[in-house]
Image (cartoon, rainbow, N blue to C red):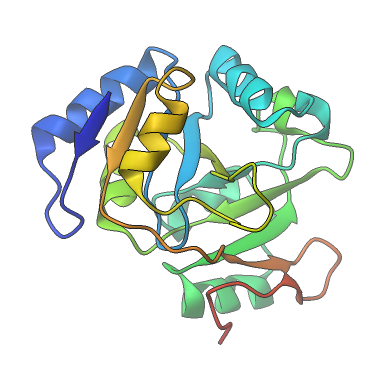
Length: 202
């Protein structure tokens, strides 16, 4: 199913349809402030396993991130030192993934050998409305093209054509970016940019 939403004013009834799918263990594709992403309710183990199959990775080796509503509920899932929190506050919402030490509140399938989790708070009203209505984070991972030359798919109609048999819903929020988020590793006590993406860290 392809569902059109307007980024500046997503329809509440459509958001509730998305929430029903997520709470039922569904997998969706949705826009962010960088590239389109595949996600599910972070508390649905079977949905997480579906995404692992879709990405061709084993759950214990997957480096997934999660999308939070705001900074206030991050401490439940990740350990955030004061200096890192200040950097996050300056840059979020925005196209960044902050890699932080994970707490034991995360599902076991997300606890990889490094015991870390990527945190995203995208500057996109559609995904913000989804997470706010859901009441807990979304597991998230990028939508990649099989072709290495074309790094990411940006057209939601083409994404739907490719993934319509693999996911329950594609949210059409207009054309996405073809540059991923900037990844900042804060898990070792310092702040290190390990992938420069669309976001310039302040």
